[in-house]
Image (tube, rainbow over all chains, first blue to last red; front, side):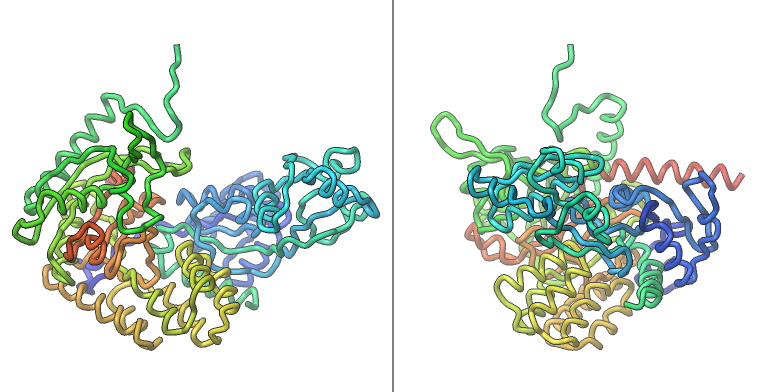
Length: 227
Length: 334
């Protein structure tokens, strides 16, 4: 601390190791691989332990649903976190600092409709709006607003591909990685909305008060991800 | 029977009120001891008066009509009402003028995240004292207030509100592209920042300068690192920050200050020095302030000014966190 060392202006430092929110699910393995490549030992998190918190030499890994990462990071319960851009876009009102595009977890947010089916266009022409089923209501709303079209939003929680197949909505806005799920359900991409990859985010206060640690982790992840 | 109150508002019960009152008293004591006299202004004002100076970002979200059809508004901070008060009541008073307040203000934030629509601010305004000496006085009072609240680990980030406006002018970025870049800087979206800078076509070196600047924060060494990036705007900001910082060092109040080239405050009226308060125990910003040298012109006064405000409830949360941390450490030491 500055008063002891005599250095000018070194502000006080938070205690304890840095806490990193790690997304479970599709991004989990690649996130651990990247952390390994950046020199963070993730072995404890790799077993089939039911624990949610893992201690490495230098930081604490907290595992959670990707969509919870912004919540924990915004509140400062985690100093930094990794999650998909789709999550950040959907929760754009959360105040977190987006520091780095990690490159993996690549997928696209798309508008999809039934193959060869003209319902999307027909609804827009004859009813003045399209009925869109999605798990990403804010992204969908913003996209259609930005492109000057009206929609009726249908928010669903589970497999959104189901909706247009049985008449709930004219199309869907959803995240597509390989496109296989769409194809198997006889759906096709009509419009590309945005590309999404995994991102490194930081709590606003941690970014200021743990500057050296956050910058160091960012630099190592930047190298490890080949950005 | 349960009778609801609007979201983002709350009742305060005796246990909490006792602690808040104690905190209030300490803060006002610090302000009074530093020569700042407490004032109160009405919670509702004429919208036309509050919105003077053309700053849409700080306009009140709560407006309504009185019985004569006048448009009234709830204040969204105390800086604007105090500007109005100074212009009206103290136009010919000897300078500098030192005022403090403890008051509720209203903003249309999303509740449920530690942010309330009605909240209490405690702060000061120093009017008529320009440049580094004025800024350093305000930061000195802020430090004393944090000490009085028992937040000995709290840090004050010190930045400059004019930096990026100047820098982007230098790079020839204007109009919508300039707004887009400023927006990414304000939300600290570095990935988006790189994309918008690329779209603005300013070249790799300039873009790197902008991104690197936004990440520069720390002790006085960051002033040199900023200067290495070059350019007039950076030089101007570095010089100004250095002057303020040296004034703080001379006053012996620089220990808590972190220089931050990435700092941006969302209120439009700041110019020159800006600051924000953090405590390691809480994830939210506890308060902030800065210079608003051009702002009083909107009220017919050509006077330099600076001030800060602390969110009382958040300071209280930080107090509680710091107390329990001290307790845990004391228990561990036994």
